[in-house]
Length: 379
Image 1 (tube, rainbow, N blue to C red):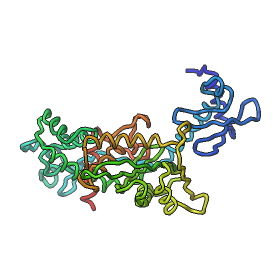
Image 2: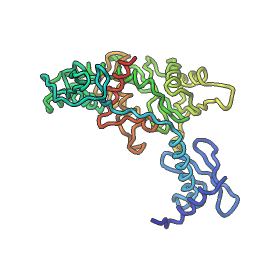
Image 3: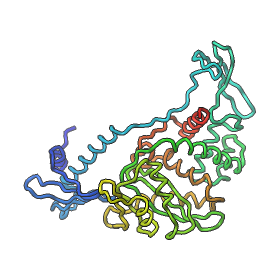
Image 4: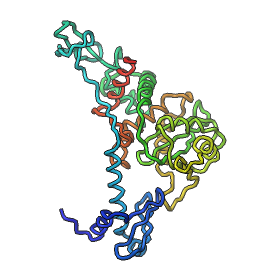
C-alpha cells in the first residue's frame, strides 16, 4: 500500500540520503533540514523523539526529522542483527542407540512406572531396548510437572500455592519437594548457560534493591543491558552505599566478554568507586562513560532498571524472606527473566533472543535442562 502521509514520505527521503543525520551521543542526534543548511536537534526519550524544529515545537506532532531518525535507527538495528551470530538451543532429540550409537532404532512401546510412562526404543543392530529421559532420570514426577511447578513459582506463586495447583493435574507433591527441584535444576542450568556469551549492547544500567535474607535487610545489586533488558549479573550485599560492588562489575564483564561504553547508575558512591577501579582508562576508545544522575524529563534514566526491580520486588513479597545469600532462587529469577519470560518492551521476545541466544521448543525449561544434562555428561 502506497504511503500517503507527507511527513512519513519526507522523513523517508531524508533517511535515504547520505550525511543527513549525525549522532552526537547515545541520546542526541542532528538531522539536516530539507529546505536549508540548518540542522535540528532530535533527542531520544522513553516516550519517543523530541525535535527542535517548529513542527515538533509548536504543533506537538511527530515531525519528518524524527521519522527520518527512527527509520535510520531501524535500518542500523537490522544490519546489526544480521551481523549477530545466533546461538540456537534446540530440544534434545533421540536419534541413536545409547549402547552402540547406531542410528537404526525404532520405537518399541511405552515403559510404565507408578507415576508416568516413558517411550522405549529398540536398536535393530544390537537388539537392545532402552529408554532415555535426559535430565529427569529417576525422578518420580514427569518433566512437564517439574517444569510447570518451576514456571508457576517464578511467575509469582508461593511454593505452597504451586503444590496446591499441581494437585489439579493429579500430581501430589509437597512444597519442599518443589524447592528441591528448583535447587537441583537451577544449578544445572546456570552452569550450562554461563558458557554461552550474550551479545549485549554498549549501554548498561546498575542499581540495587533491598530484600530480606533470614529476616535481615540485605541488598541485591544487579546489572542490566539497555537494548535487550538482559540481566547480566547480580551481587548480594549487606549495605547500600558502602558495599564494594567491584565483584558485580567483574562478573558482568566476564559474562558479557566486554565492558560497556556507557554505564547508568543513581550516582551512589560505591558505583562511582567500582567504575573508577574496574573500568576507568585514560584511552578514549576504551573509556566507559558513567552517567551518575537521572533526567526525569529526558531519556537518561533508569526506568528499565526500575522495571526489573519491580519484578524482583513482586517475587520477594511472595517469598517473604530468603533463607541464605547463595539461594538458588535469585539465580532462578535471573534465568526466568532472561530465557523464559517474554517482554512486551522488546516485541514479545525474551532478553536472550535479543542477545543472540534462542531457546527452541514449547517448553523452554525442558530444552535448557536437557541440553545442560547432556553437556554435563559429556564433560
